[in-house]
Length: 112
Image (cartoon, rainbow, N blue to C red; front, top):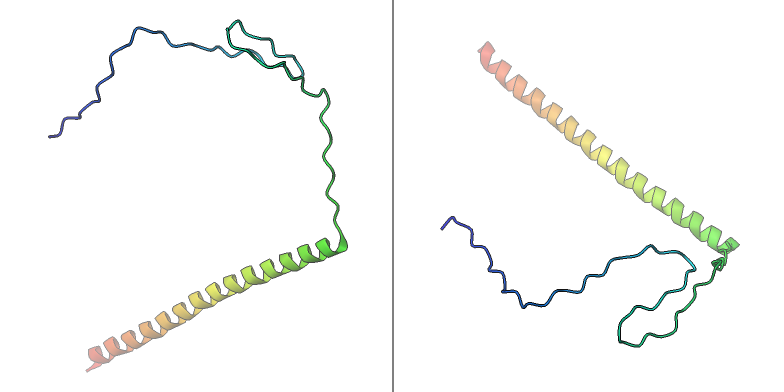
């Protein structure tokens, strides 16, 4: 019951798998055809220099939207944090009042 059951390995078929060894990759180098019987398309040469991407421009509307979004995020996070602090303060005050009531009840029993 507590012994593991290992899966059985399939029997070998007698053919060896084709092992591909990776070669060093050089940017811009042409791909040399391999010695296989299949037909390969002509090698495609990569451009030597990368094309620079267009820079993003910030319009006044985009800047205003970013400022408004950031302000809204700060206000929401601030509201959540203040409400959590207020909840902790109310809990602490109520526990203090409960402790005083229990203390006064216990002290009243000792004096009688």
